Length: 405
Image 1 (cartoon, rainbow, N blue to C red):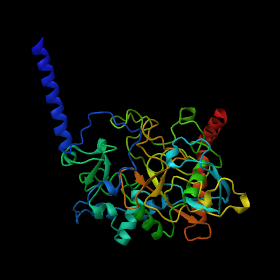
Image 2: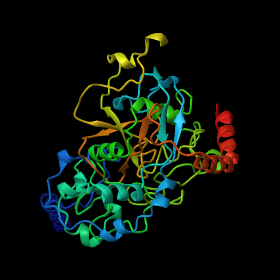
Image 3: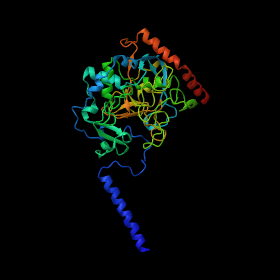
Image 4: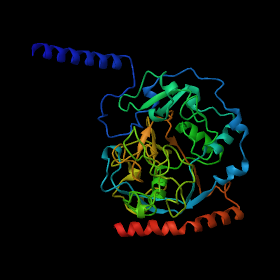
């Protein structure tokens, strides 16, 4: 009996020594279920990684040569969002620590918003014409979820994000190499550009004579003129058994059943319109940078005070004047209800302006008095036909919302 106990104790000591060795060696192997109920997107930032040696030959000239300006125009469509008094925030915040509450009114002037997230094709044109180099390329690395990294690349990584060990800093990961240096975007030109920082997104928007949307604008457009609505179409995640967004299905982060058709990013045109404006993928697919600096307490910010009379509301509130992080909205393909229930209109998160990741992109906005990007009448006719062809789907969505409330 004593020998058995001695043997058992010996085995336990050996196993503990093995675990300690793995931890001290910097291995990213996971031995226990993460305690966090978060996908760790905010933790994957420049403050948690070191700068790698950038590869000066990282450009993919074949991608840049293959740009078709006619195809780019397909994704340049913008739609107007009418000015008025909108409700943002929530009476019942699901993640209060993120600053989802309180519910409050904002006054917005009419503005225009991109129908689609900015695609690899559009960003390729930007790089081709300007020679722009993203921050991920200058830093030499960016964050990728472990699930999509090749074994060869993974074997060279010896660090991870402590709060989210599935996020790995990958040398050579950038917008043209989304999962590492052995990947490319040749067949992903209609997918959203990723691994772009807030600074990169701002540079692109400026080049297009546009800007990033303010958080109040983004959320108002997403809510589709409804207060406290979870999703653009209502409160049902899958109305009438139809998928309207790209999120994670299955056990995160090890298994994605692809119930919605995609394991990672999807083309920017995927799924029926999420709003009556005709906006696509406002929630799900990739997080979207907005203009505002991050703050979690809106009670003391005059632009967002919930008790102000409508006539006293400032037009186009822009959030706090400064900070360390920028706001991102909409959630991504990595979100699940169990690990990051942030694929909601009122949900929000943040990253430093120089951070980038595999699930982080953007779309542009512009003021209504800037007519430099107006579509001509022929384009508008085509757009109207496309929207009309999806009216049956919109009816399904609207009826689902009415049924629920």
